[in-house]
Amino acid sequence: MNRTKVCHFRSKQCPVRHNSPNIHAKEMRQDGLSYATISHQLKLSKSTVQDMIKNDYEKPKKKRGPKKNLSGCKQLRFKPSIAALKEKNVKITASKLKKEANLEVSIRTVHRSLHENRYQLKNGKKTVLLNKKQKAERVRLCSESNTHR
Image (cartoon, rainbow, N blue to C red):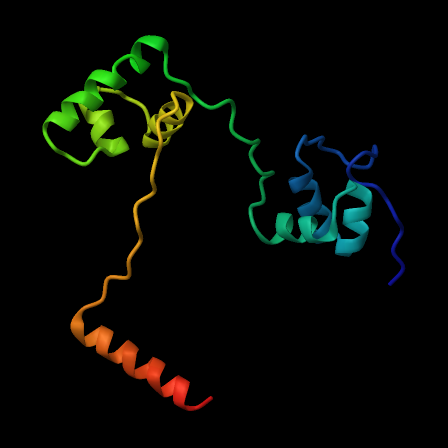
């Protein structure tokens, strides 16, 4: 089979002009062109062309915009809210502080604002939650693996 290299994407032979290389890649593949040829003509990588044809490929979205900051009046709500939580003898967390100060932002934004105001944040300890049976099984497995060494 003798194939001629014709650029379907930017030539006059392409009767319909599409803005999306995704459509052109599918058309070119249906015409019998290889992934390598299509990727060369569209100036994309071979794996990207394969993704475009096999899946409904869309370009990755742009990165997020700037992070949201709290305004000055909202940041002033922190101190009274922290004092109120201390009076209740409650462990202060970002979610509780968010509720106490009536803030409509994410918890991560509260963390960031506290850090900017030089409050010290401690991450909670992550513990493995096992029942007694699971603990015994884990101890047994560890002791067996130590005896085999």
